[in-house]
Image (cartoon, rainbow, N blue to C red):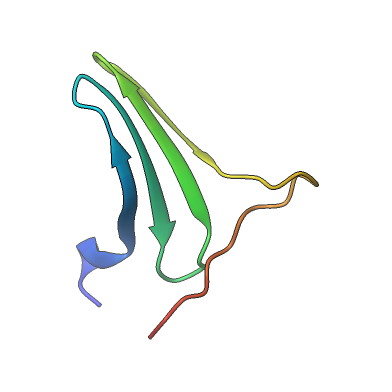
Length: 59
């Protein structure tokens, strides 16, 4: 795996205001990224119990 290949965008919406879901290919943890103008933020996606949403990681 190349250094830049750890995260994969699985969902993207918008152009000026962007919402994306990124998956960590090593741990499977899903992250929500939101950008509006020059500001942005990244946070893990959580289920109803407050646990991170984890996708199945394929080799």
